[in-house]
Image (cartoon, rainbow, N blue to C red):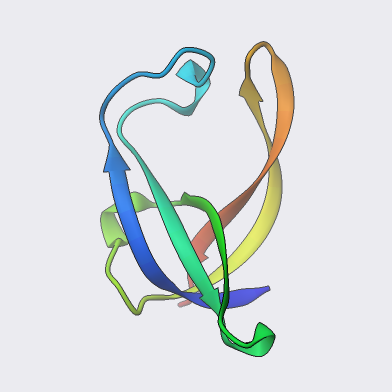
Length: 79
């Protein structure tokens, strides 16, 4: 799945249960043009490239949260 960054935020505060993500991490809202602009949230990796309008591609990955594996969308810049 592909889209572009609509909005993003860099998280510096540790939240209980999400320690495995490491700090800081970037959460992004991604607009999907092929789905009439519907937006999905996920992690942007690497977060250093965070900018509105950035073209990204998503994949699903298991992350540790609250001592179990939770599926999340990981967005990465399109080269």
